[in-house]
Amino acid sequence: MTTAADKIKAGSFSICWREKNRYYYGWLDKIYQYNVRPGSRVLHVGCDCGDLLSAVRPSYGIGIDSNPETIEEAKKRFPDLHFFAQKPHEIQLNETFDYILICNSIGDWPDIQQVLEHLHPLTNDGTRIIITYYSYLWESILRLGSACGLRRPNSYQNWLPPEDIANLLELSDFDFIRSESFMLFPKYIPLLSSLCNRILSLVPWIRGLNLINLVIARPHPKAKEPDSMSLSVIVPCRNEKGNIKDAVERIPNLGSFTEIIFVDGSSTDGTTAEIEKQIALHPEKKITLIHQGQGKGKGDAVRKGFAAAKGDILVIQDADLTAPPEDLPKFFNAMVQGKGEYINGSRLVYPMEKQAMRFLNLLANKFFGLLFSWLLNQRFRDTLCGTKMISRKNYDILAANRAFFGDFDPFGDFDLIFGSVKQNFKVIEVPVTYRARTYGTTNIDRFRHGWLLLKMSWFAFTKFKWLK
Image (cartoon, rainbow, N blue to C red; front, top):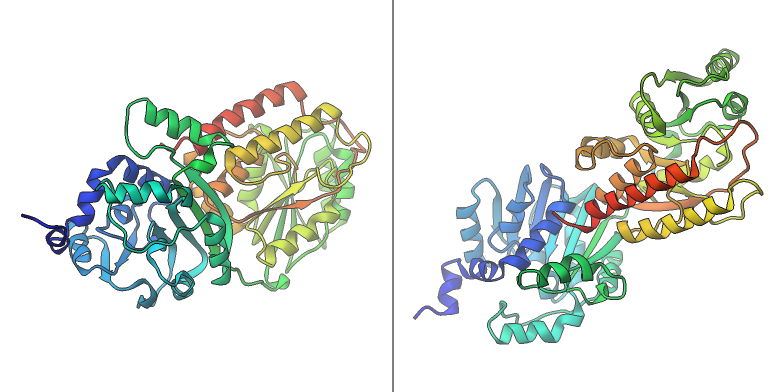
């Protein structure tokens, strides 16, 4: 008769439980595949037989587990990956990783803070720690499942809500990014499983009962010297002649250098002539004019401006100057101090000037801020503020992975927002004082663009709420 101990010696114990609970483990695979870029350097702590590490398709993957028999099985099954039998608080590696995965093993560690501190030297500025763990509300059900042989037995277990995990990460010099939850029903029953896990699990008042909690963090960043970073200010413009002179004079010089890139969208009011005039009047400033050509929309203009930029940090400044350029130092300082990797302006914190935003527009912006906060599981007070900042390095990551969303965004705002959330960049908002336009008329059509925003919301739902 084959005992559980025999199975462990044969290295098949973990495979047995994974096969027995394929539906549940399939969800875990999808969660990690969604959050880990293929081709990355990945360390999996508590890797069992290596299935999850293989599922995220790393270019270089290391799995660590304290069970030597499990590690031997992993080596046989996934010879292209590297596996070592080591205790999590005694890991001996002299390299860094893009991702460190901790899947359901954090509860097995008697001293979680000690392990997290031991993992910290294995990180770099861009590393993401991705932790999944059972909701503590499921403790009694899972213990019963173990007793009945429906899930693997656990002799010792910490039952931690996401807030406790975030606190332990903070104590270990990691910076919490966001948390999320999944799965109301861990077994597969046709229709019922889809109803519970793809619909009911998303409802705000029900999702607190979900089984799987996800927490994502990064190492606390080190502040950079402002003079070590340069800034590219992208100014999309169409029929903004009267604002060009003010934009040139009011955009501050920040960092080692500041360049201003105007991207003109076939203006008919003399905007391009005014830009060329300002270039001639200000030879001391780095000013460039790009013609958008056949491209349409602010999104296309922003992408062309970013492609031409030479700065370490990229920021959008709307040509109407309703979000004043004088606020740009707040964004720049937050970026160089490491407080955020994607910095989003918000017009809905401070009182705005009269006539700056029509009442219906204000209501719509508040509504879409709430909607996208739910869709992205990341707080956004204002999704359509024109001032948005990202580093060149992180924008290149976003652009390289744009195929996940495609060329979907005519505004330019959501390409950055969606991409930053998908790549687990640290997102913060900086309030701006919203001013009334002093020249020209808005290019926004309330109803046509409102319909586009509703379509964008559905697009976000399919990409962020329905894991494929």
